[in-house]
Image 1 (cartoon, rainbow, N blue to C red):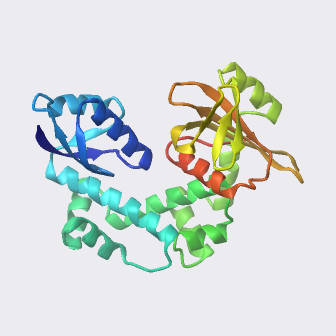
Image 2: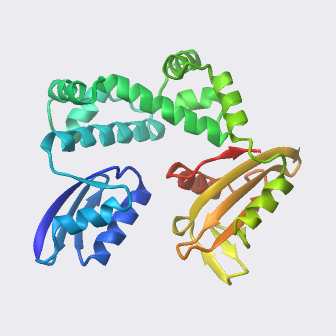
Image 3: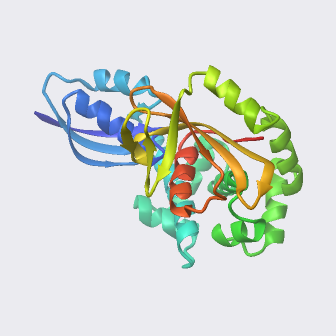
Length: 287
């Protein structure tokens, strides 16, 4: 056995970690450490980096060998981590201090190198990524703009709105309208159900405490075991029962079904986990 250190590009979410881990284990690797962008493994002597790279490339990942490219990926992942911390903590930490500590290098050095290679400053990249997260939270429709501003550490709603318009060229209200028009694939719940059934979403899923149950398959699934490939929200029947939400769900075996929720998101913990799956790579459409 030999030890390999892998620096991996495009490994940006917990789901990516699971995919990389599964693929490496199938190749016979023993994983010592795995985190976003980095894996330390022990592998059989006859397993080459080229074979590992080929396997991971099929999922959109890339092995990085150049030291500067590795640093660029570390900076980008560090900024992503910083935004995640902003959402969970009220403690203020300067981005420059955070990156210097996270990566273990002088911030001025990181800043100059990033600008040279990427063609924009770390601060600009961070602003763009924070606005991307604002877009995601707007799409999820769980928080109002004031709550989003607090969650992401903006000093005020006005500051969030002005930065959003400067980056996107649209006001928040205009962005919401564009998003609705672009994603209005189905006129109503009935039309969506008919089309999705034709697409092969034949099984029915139901909420069961902290997991999903499929009686058709006589099985229960944790959210983490499923892929949320479609998501539609319809306001047409908004009453005491709440909004109608459809999730298109795929199992690891490729079986497809639907979860229809009219409960006004009463199980918020479960909805949050479903939202995390959407954030990991699925899109939302508005009905």
